[in-house]
Image (tube, rainbow, N blue to C red; front, side, top):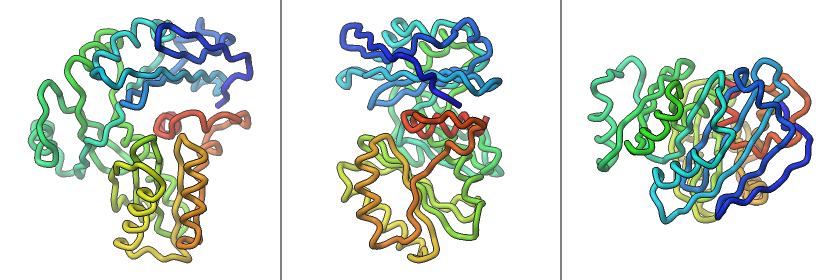
Length: 292
């Protein structure tokens, strides 16, 4: 997969910033997969050609944190001209810490809301969606507010909705089967951190923690390591995240405690050598594209 090496221009529309690659051929959009990521930290979307694996496009879109998700989504859909093409497949990823996992063999559709609200306080005007994870034998339940879901469903009637945690679990389930060690994976965002603990493809823990700085990440990761009785010399910790400097600082702080420390590099899972800027793409979008 490659981000085309052409001139990047900046377009400013009010308070909304887009990074646009002018050379991508949107006349081929019916071959492409569109993946939209919605988060309180900001919106983004990628366009990817799974047939040739050589057409890739990514943009970010800042949000007004004083407004609701729906209030941000409406102008986003109106202003982003790239969203108006016809695509082969459309994925919508919702970044939220409000999710819960259910073993697939125990899951029943009619129990979704009951199970979800056993773990989280009920909020008005939201619906509960689910992702069935075949590789992990899990179901992830997560919410989306009704108005946001309406706006997105009207514009993209065939879209698939995902919690951002879901493709990460599927990708890491496969990845963790390599070798004989236990593994912890951490995906670090601006104000939160997704953590996964796996035993050769078997999920032991998944959770999202609010963080303010490196010391918060250290606290959670080392406590999880201790509680699971992982081995300091043999078992592994893998890090990823949008902020490279934060990730590097965390890695340095962890080195005295964990010998097998790595940076996640999904580039090898794409069948192309042109991956210079893959790290610009959120890890959950990368995971979804790999698992397709």
